[in-house]
Length: 118
Length: 112
Image (tube, rainbow over all chains, first blue to last red; front, side, top):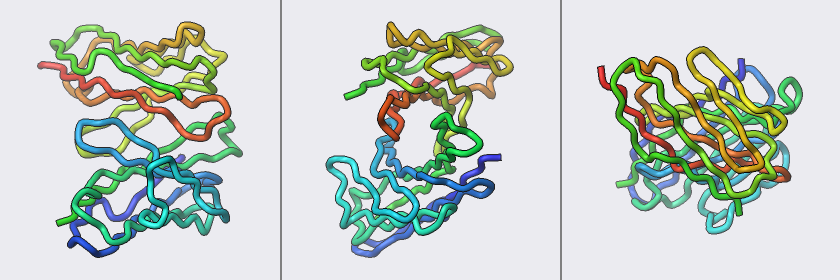
């Protein structure tokens, strides 16, 4: 149990376009989802935290108008990179937390999405 | 702000050796600590989670210890195999915070 999926697994887009990445919890309800970004050979950096039905909380330095996060249901959160530029190219990973069966703040991670902006 | 450091950054060992990966954190007010494995270009696989009240957790050939007061955790891998080659990340869930603070990772190569 506790499986998190992401779609797409990789995407290549032109500069200036918008890209949507989906994060789904497949077998549990995620009260909170997290979006991380990972640059090559670096560790994961938290971008934002989203709770179902409320606005996302963004980390310092992350532009909320550029990285739109929607957590409309307990199993789905989306990250939209608007007007993408080459510097947005990165590996984006989501995680989900369930507080019912596992009240230990354990997060379950998706497989990641590789974004390349040309 | 919580800072998590992992030493060494990279490690190569011959197959069959036992090894220890180290993780240190600056703020001991943690809720739990997790060890993850990440293969190149892939997501994270959770290996072990240790609650702040626990001293260690074991899963198969893996054993993780936690010394919260000194801000340290170790991941012990017994009888290493080439399939263990990956980057190992530790992450701290700080008390009062939702997110995980990740370490810099240790890239492990097990040589056949």
